Amino acid sequence: GYPLIMGVCYAAGYDVTAQTGAARYLPALADGLLYLFFAQLATLVLRLLEGRALNHRIAGRSVVIGDIPWVAQCAEAFLSKCFACTYSITGIAVYSGNPADHLVHRFTHRVVRGTLLAIGRPDGRLAALTSQESAVCLSVNQASSIQNIGGTLESLTLGHAPFKLPLSAFHVALPGNRPQYICERLL
Image (cartoon, rainbow, N blue to C red; front, side):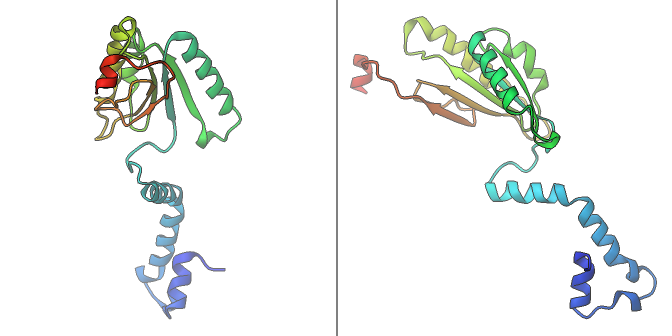
C-alpha cells in the first residue's frame, strides 16, 4: 500500500521517484504532516460536524459540579467512578463545590476553554430560596464571563426555574407537581 498523499500522486500519474530535488520529497513530507496531526484534524472535523466550539481543549477536560455539599460530593464520586476505567485521552478531572458558598473562590481561577460547569439551581420563586438562587446565579455568571483565548466554559444549569441565565450555555427545567402560585397562573 501507499501512504495517502503518495497514493493520490501515483493515481494522478505523478511519479514521485522520477522527480529530483524537493519535488521528490514533498508528497512524503505532506504524508508525514498528515499523520502527525491526524488526531487533531479528526477532532476538529468531529467538532465541526457537531457544531461545537473548535478552540476547546482536546485533552485534560474538567467537569465542575456545583450544588449543595452532599449532592455535589455524591455526583463527583459517581462521575469519577464512571470515568475511572477510561483511556487517558477520554478521562476527565471532576471537582465539586457549593455555588452559594465557595465555588467561585475555589474554581474560577481554573476556568479554561472546554470546562463543563454543571450547577443545580434552587427554585427562587420560593421566598426561602430567593437569596440562595441569587448567589448561585451570580456564581454561574461570574464563572461564565471568564475568557480564555476567546473561549469560556460551558455552563449547564438544572432546576425548577423556567428561565435560562443569559451567560449559561444550557438550562434544563425540571417539571414539578407543586400547585402554581396565583401570580404564575396570571402570567
